[in-house]
Image: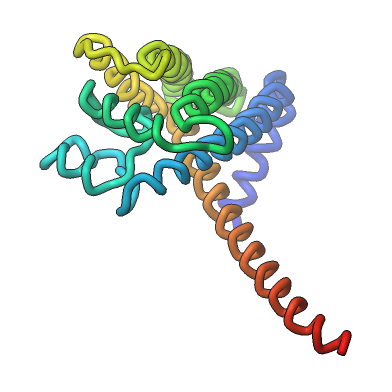
Length: 249
């Protein structure tokens, strides 16, 4: 209980600071933009899952072992969600997403025109949240000197994360322009390097990694809840259809 009381006092002090209102606004914007981006990304993921069987590729699936086999046996995902990708994978992603549809649009168009654009806005809000959080800590009267110095370093990681994430999105939009992957190892290597910098900087910012983890878990829980509610609605609907003839008769 004492630990919880201290945490509550800490958050109250941060909220009452000069940066508190802006920090709250950045946190709210980050959460809203995360769910918007996640919703758009889910549509692309579902479209791609209809093209291939198996589970989606994970962060390090192309970093070790037989990458070609992994691409053949697992569902393609957006390149910025992978720790390693090259021009061969981008060609594979383009091929899969050009033959999948999200409503009336190709999955590639939905990814490039919607997901990546919303992701830029999310990166801006997340970077602002990280910087404001650690700026609040660095300038707080209660923060010891060692924590204030670490906070300044974490602020820099927030700035680096924002730059890397936005640059990565812009680079991928250019590479995937008109549905053609640029067969230029240097361009693809630059995009992949930005992806790695993004992951590293977000992790070193600490609070950015925690925020992303919390939002990811919340999104999965909400998706699971909505899935259960949809199944319940279908069962109730079938039950009413079966009872309707009996009641009319």
